[in-house]
Image (cartoon, rainbow over all chains, first blue to last red; front, side, top):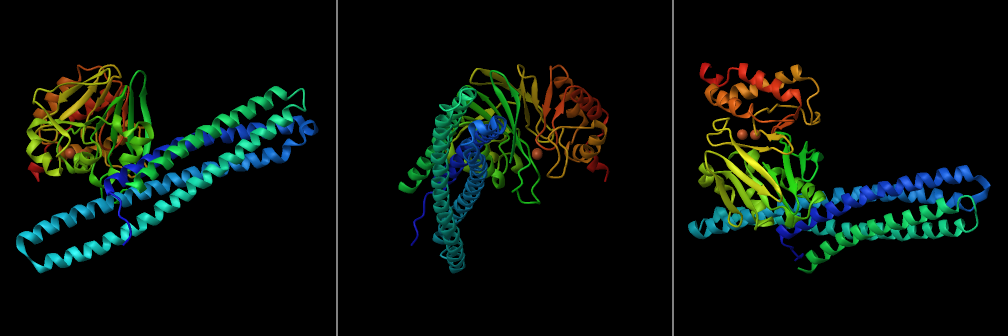
Length: 200
Length: 244
Ligand SMILES: [Fe+2]
Ligand SMILES: [Fe+2]
C-alpha cells in the first residue's frame, strides 16, 4: 500500500512550494537580466575580455533554463495542489459514506465506497509520483544555482585581468551571487516544506 | 490564476481572477485580498472548485499564518462554498459575513473558523492598521448582503453589483464603458430584485469617495466609470422576471 499523506497538509505544502517557486522565478528574471548585461559588456569589451565570451553565453543560457524550470515547478505544484484537494474531497465522501453505511447497513453504499476507494488510490498514486518528480526538479534547480556561482567566480577572475571593466565585472559577479543565493534559499524553503510533509 | 496589485501604500489590495484551470461551466469570479501588516482579509474567497488555485495564489504574496480573516458578501456558492476547506487550512481565522446567513453558510463547513456575523446595519473591521467598513447592500441580490469600503484606498468592493458576464480571457479593467453596459444589463435586471433596494444603496454609496469599484464578476471600475455606473444602474429597471 502506497503511503497516503494528509490531503490538507498536502494541499498547503504544494501551495507553499508554488509560492516559493513563484518568488524564485521573479528573481530568475533578474538573473537573466544580469546575464544579458554581461553579454553586452563582453560585446563592448571585445578581445579585452576574451575569456568571458563563452562563460557569459553559458550564463545567459543557464538563466533562461532557470526561469523555465522555476515556472515548470510552479505549474507542477499547482497540479499537485489540485490533486490534493481532489483527494481531500474523496476522503470526505468516503467518511460520509461510511457513516451512511453504518446507519443503513446498505450493501449498495458499500459498493460506492469500494469504487471511491479505488479512485482515491489512483489519485494518491499520481500524487506520490508527482511529488517525487517535484523533488528531483528542485534538486536540478539547485545544481543550476551552483553552476551560476561558478560563473560568478570566473567573472571575478576575469575582472582582475582588465582595468577598464574591472568594476563592472565585479559588480556583476556580486549580483549573480546575490540572485543565486536568493533563488537557492527559496528552493531550500520549498524543499523543507516537502520534507516536513513526507516525514509526517 | 491571474494576480494583480491594485493599491499599494501602507496596506495593499490584490485581485485574483481569470483562473484558466476552472471548469468551463462555472461562473468566473474575482477574488480580492487586503493585506495590512501581519493580517489580511480575503473578500469573497470563492467556490470549492477554485480553492486550490486561490490557496496557491495567496501564498505567492503572504504566508499562511497571515491569512487571518475571510469576508463573504452573501451566501452564494460562488462566494463561499470553499469555506469547509479554508476551515481546515486556516482554523484560527475569522469569517465576517451577514449574521442572517449563519445557519445557512455553516452548511459549507465551519467547525474551526470563528463565525462573526455582521448585523444588518453594517459595521467596521480592523485589519492590521487599516479600518474597513461594511456597507449594507441588502436585497442586492441577496436578502442579507454587504459591501466593503476602504476610505484610505478609496476602494469599494461591490460584490455582485457591477458584475458582468464575460469570456475567460477578458481584461480586468473596463476599456469602454458604453459597450461594457451590454455585458452588465441582463445580470442586473434579472439578479437584482428591487428598484427600492437599488435606490437605497445608490443613496448610500454616492456619499462615499470612491476611486475604484471592485465587483465579484467582470471588470473593475476606475475613476469616473464609478459615477457612470451609478447613473446607469439608477436608470435601469430591475426585477424583470416578474414581467415574464
Ligand atoms: Fe450572488
Ligand atoms: Fe456572484
